[in-house]
Length: 89
Ligand SMILES: [Zn+2]
Image (cartoon, rainbow, N blue to C red):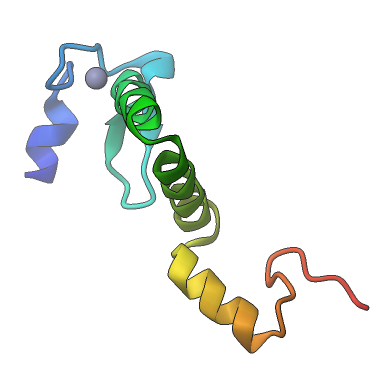
């Protein structure tokens, strides 16, 4: 499966999988940036708030490797100081 995906030259929507149109996910697979933005825009216009939450979730997962739920649990554990940019009082 992974091998097959790695050999693909175009995504399922027909965007070319090369150059600036590829991002590598934390799982190591390639993702079509054009598709991500298409999906994100469609979701955003359908429900901006949910899309915003989802974007935060994605960024949290992608940048820091944990979900918003994990982050919220950490925040409670750490008396609502952010574990990422925690500053001394
Ligand atoms: Zn695509």
